[in-house]
Image (tube, rainbow, N blue to C red; front, side, top):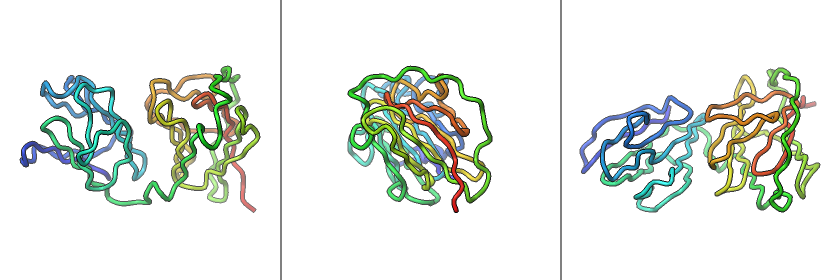
Length: 225
């Protein structure tokens, strides 16, 4: 399981396992990792952990978030990356797993489009259906709006990134007991069947209608021959 090693001036202060899907970092007491230092914003950064992948997002902090000396707003963490928050360092250690580069990354701004930025209307409620349980079933996404309406994406990889970087990004992960969607970036959360999600992973069912970055799409499962 991925973990963080917190240090300052070369002195290790503590080690934390990333057990939650969303781990917050900041000066305020409600954060999962509280760093009581004026250089750290109240809500400084967050790490979303999905399977063996982790996404770091700066939460509009005053002094910024750095990874390996470079300022970042959103960053896919690799093992041994060093997150810098003022004088504090958080070293990210991963236990391995498939690298993100081997998975799918679909940007609506380039490959799907956002229908000239027009927001789609809220989708009607769809009756819930069981998520795919068979190993022969694969999740599919059909685009319902935008310039690429009608296009179908096969969710064959363990993790698929969807959205528009800088605006709204979500990931769909393939797990043994189904497919789950999780918010990663942006102030607006994905909408499923007309309802806005929260920071937790949401299990997808057949015929769920998803809206991300103004694009409406439908999730369904399909058995392989």
